[in-house]
Length: 379
Ligand SMILES: *Cc1c(COP(=O)(O)O)cnc(C)c1O
Image 1 (cartoon, protein in one colour):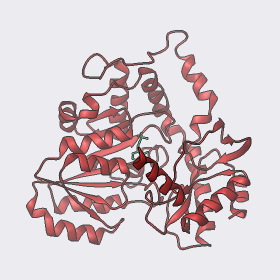
Image 2: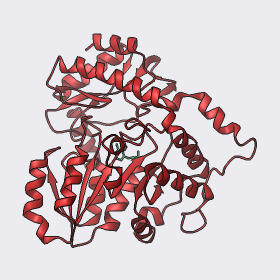
Image 3: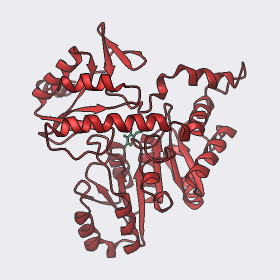
Image 4: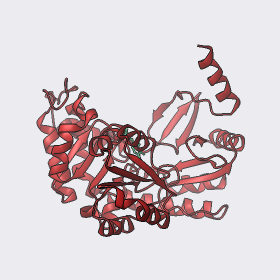
């Protein structure tokens, strides 16, 4: 016990102690300790979570015959309700691919797919900055693991040139929009590596891109025109899609293989049919949220420009980091912005590298241009 206490004391001394914030949500605002602040830290990128009209329209479909609030079982036992197949069919059709598979969360997807597909003859090569859930999946897989410097494809080319000959399979892992830096992977370049090394399976996590990018909101893969060439295309429903869960879009063979091997799919109670029905309801409408996508793109451009005037900056998305360097300065700046009515949070090591502590603004289509301009005046 003493050991745990020492650990926490050290965290406090380093300004890295984590607590669960007590927040009350009011649309695009959050309230904490009696202070109302614009929420600039959420992932509700299209502002769908706050649209009571959508919720009412959803529930109006059912009267008093609501979908079940629990699946009561894994999908492999009795938990496989028809709505799962309906959502998977919808996903496969929209992405124009053979099949899709739903998971309880992005975390489940990322810790489950890689261990299921990788064996001792597999090499996993991942971008240095991929999400913790992918790192955990890679660790669980016990495959050989190499990382390339963030978005540095010359480094990736070197790694492949030096190692490809020794492995029957290579899984190349990246996010499309990176969660902490808000910059974007060059997916067509990654696809080109597949031509050179046919044993590559390309794995792309679109958690921060689905809903927001692409003509119909399918993500960066749609925007960059390479949906068909990504072997393992993962996205989540908990962010822009205002629901919960995750999907993989893939070939039927991979889906069948995962149903037989993927432990978080096999050994966990499936999502409640009510949530899956809500996801289906929103995903069906995804092409129609174009106005929100355009508005968010406009806001993002304004904030990126404002940050670029203050520091070197190479970001291309709605996630805009404002680098302050050390922990103390970052914590103080976040506190100051919160006092001014902006709920933004300091992001510190180990989430980001030492010396790159930052405030991470994550924009939503709920914001008005005037609200954003007022924030920029406070930077
Ligand atoms: C949020 C996130 C996840 C986890 O998804 P959940 O559905 O919240 O578990 C996975 N990958 C990335 C890149 C994420 O940002």
